[in-house]
Image (cartoon, rainbow, N blue to C red):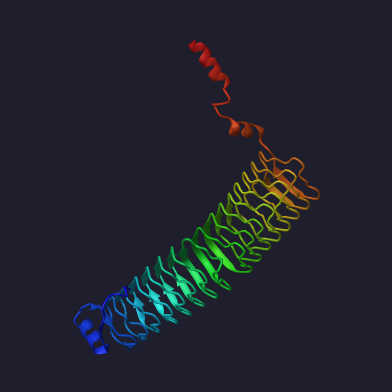
Length: 373
């Protein structure tokens, strides 16, 4: 809100009179005004100073606040359906325990604002400053933080479903005990975070930074990690059935004793990675680089390692059944004590896969060329 605008003093009765006549409340100063329990549905406040206002249990459905000062305002138990806040100053405001539905915060300053134990249904924060905001033990359903400042944001103990966060630098965000189910993180940075034992199911990460991230025992079922950097991360004993780690750097990472059934590691770097005692039933390692990786005592039944580089890999004690090793590189691989069957390279198929007319000329093509001369 512009500070050089002259505001006229106002009070409860005048504000209610404006609302009753469907007129915008414009350029008013009503610091600490008590609007608790009032019917303010559809009201419009423009460039008003409502700092410290009491709005508990007020009906603010479809109301709009534009360029207002709402510092320290209290909204407990207010009706906040389709309410709009645009370019507002809202530090230390209080939405604790509120139910917000289809509410929009656009270009607002919300540092230290609390939504603790609240329910946020399809709430959008766009280009907002939410530094040190409090969403502990809240529920966020299909809500989003688009290009927001989220440093020191707390979602400890919160449940997030269908959430989208862009420019997601999560290094300083308090994620302790958070449960995240179906979420999209763009440009996520979780490097160095301790996410051990947490739930991050059906989440999507693209080009995420996860260097040194501790995810031991985490639930990652159905999550997708594409072009992510896991250098130095700890993924031991993760529960990640049907997860996808595509084109990612997992070299040397510990994934021992994990449930990775039907997981995919397509074109990932798994050099020196440790999968010992893991469930890799029907997992895909197509075109992966798994040189010197450890697969001791793994369940490799129906796993797909076609075209993978598993040279010098250790499969001691592993169980195979219809495991696909077609066109894989296996120089120096150790199979001591392994059991079961695998499908070896089909030479004719391999020739067909690498054939290209640009470098190989079929016999019939040569004959046709000579007949034309």
